[in-house]
Image (cartoon, rainbow, N blue to C red):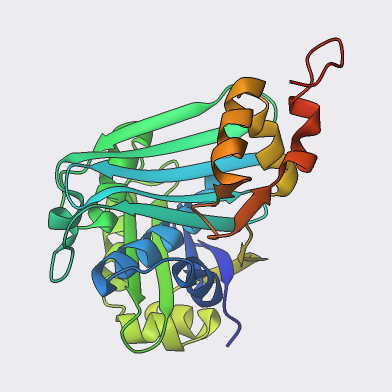
Length: 287
């Protein structure tokens, strides 16, 4: 089975769309950079799949970020993706997370979905983390912000194999009197899917198992891949906001400046010779 793919599909007889996402390899890349407990790892896998499914919102070149911010041990969990489904993620943990449920991990807080187009204004949607699972929080988000009934199934595991997969079913503008019943029917079938089936079956096999009595039309498939956007150049660009005096003070203390990427865990080291452009004033005089 091909992993790390997003498959979109439509129902010919219903005004309903769907997506299936598998992201095993990208999930491995993300958690390999962090020492997550199984509970936090599972949360990050579900968040990765959820963000991948939400890229359908992007009808243009741009980025989407899904953040969980709460007062539980998981202070922050975030996955970023772009229109090409290049993903990265990280989390900030304070305290013990073993044995905790989703609501215990995040506590009281918010889910923040940010869409940033390359051209145009940024959009941000915020909902409370007031449900018992990430799936329910996403369904609540679509109900509140888009008024689109949505069914979300998310599963992730790092205890045996590192696996992450999910399914999204969403209504389109109603075209029949039975639209609500149709959506309930399609959603009820989606909820029969087991984690093992999402992990093991190909996307075509899974759709046939769930909807063999319906007419399902497969649309485009997109690959999901891990990619961090950090670079030496970006680090140097961020150092431009620090005064030459501060840079010199750090260099005197440590002989170098070290910068760490929270997403891929890569470290960047800069010595005085790398920072000469920042150590000269407007007249070219060295400090």
